[in-house]
Length: 62
Image (cartoon, helix red, strand yellow):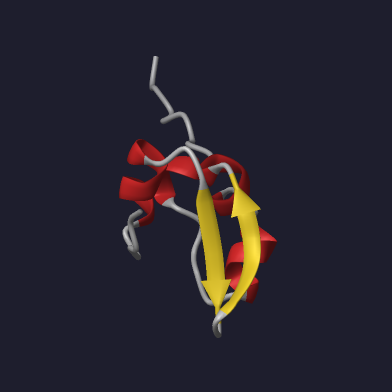
């Protein structure tokens, strides 16, 4: 069991996460499913981890 606010670490090492807010379980499931839900994360004062944000392709000049 790991308790952490390091969301990137949790994505890398955990198969399951339980999101607890104010002492109540609000979500239980895979890290990518739970932490990838922007609305859920923001509703509980968290940000979606950077590794789950879409990446933009840099523009290349020809």
